[in-house]
Image (tube, rainbow, N blue to C red; front, side, top):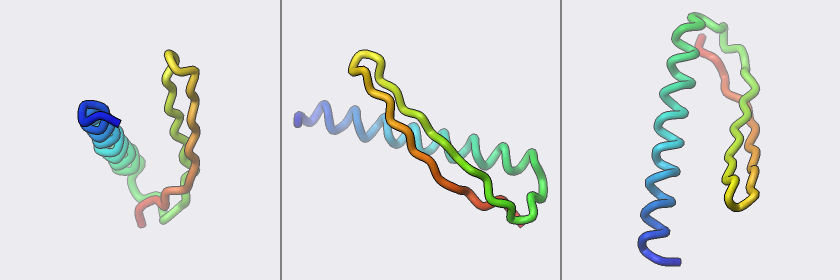
Length: 64
């Protein structure tokens, strides 16, 4: 793959990671003490032009 492809991919994935982490941290902060409760997480990545829908699920432990 080309250098332009690699750079655009890395830039997008970095933006997704950083902004998603900030949003999750903000939501946990607003919720206050969640007692370490686990929260189910689902991220959906879509690229309509490629007919792609990729789903990632997991669990994030709340703050104590």
